Length: 521
Image (cartoon, rainbow, N blue to C red):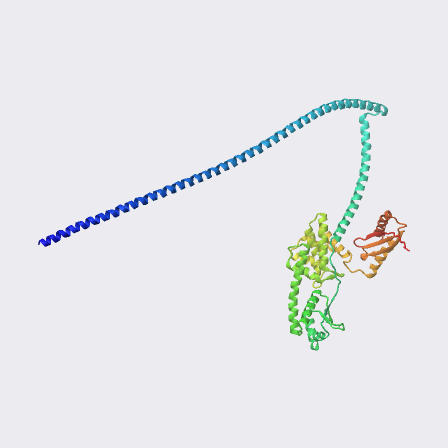
């Protein structure tokens, strides 16, 4: 029992001592931690104070920089304002100086005006005095004249007026006659100038009329293939095209003959395709001819559209355009009808513009004036009747229809455009080179030109050139001087105008040349 108590007491005492020792140890550890914490706090506070000081210094620096920027901007703006104020002051100063100058000039002008007014008032007084003196003199002279003529002033005025009226009537009648004659001459001259100007501003190509086409062959054996066995190929070709094929002794060529130019062109194109392909038999011939006919329709349409584009005409019906394309394969007196129509259109437009008419309407009438020639071989009647009827069916402008119908004088002309078309048609057919001219007439015209030039004194030689459109005259320098050359050129031109008939104009050039030759020995 006692041992147990002693043991318990010993245990309790040991526990108390262990507790005391632990408490002491823990206290030391706590004191050490507190000391460490305080040291750490002091370090943190010191670093915070250093950072705060740095931040403060940075803030002060930034504030100073911002202040300097604001200050510099303010000073710059202030300087700009000062410069603007100085400019405004200079402008005001310049204006003040200019106003001062104007005031001085105004003052000078006022002085001049006042001096002029005084001068004018003095002149007016002098004029008034002289007018009064003149009136007195006139009255005195009139009284003397009345006494001498034994007639009052009113009676003299009446008699003088009657005499003047009679003379004025005679002068007016003579003047009216002169004006009328001059107007007719000027109108005739102006009309000629307008036509000549239009002619020489327009020139279309022409072709020679022909009813045959020649197709070249690669060799003579091709003639036999074209004819075929017992002539079946040539018969099929002629039946399909309506054109005669002439195979003669002409080397490496056959001739296509027919009066329809469109069919003849189709036959030519088809035969060239067959020759190029090499397969020539009745079935193939029919296929190629049919295909070529369709191509020809497209070609005709394109030609018609191009003609409209060339002269600047729009809004034509497609059938009318196709007929225009057909005219490309028609000729009249050796002149291509479509080229002739385009030339007439251009001439009409030029003359209409000179006369103040509508050039587009004039060109439209000129382009369509021979439209009937495209179908005149298929329809009865003249080409003017056929063309006018055809255009009427397509609601063409009545002015154009009348111009087409009347350009050969078959029906009365109802407008100025009809007259223009008739004149342009005649000009196009008569211009140099438009239609074929017999060789004899051409040679005679050249001989006549040279004969007229040779008839003048001092002419050495004369040469007609440019197909009779120009003549060059060489004169003897001993007889004709430089001044006389221009007079001679005018005299020759007048004699040509008087004795010859020719289209267009003829240029006369007189050449005077003197030469001196020596030999060095």
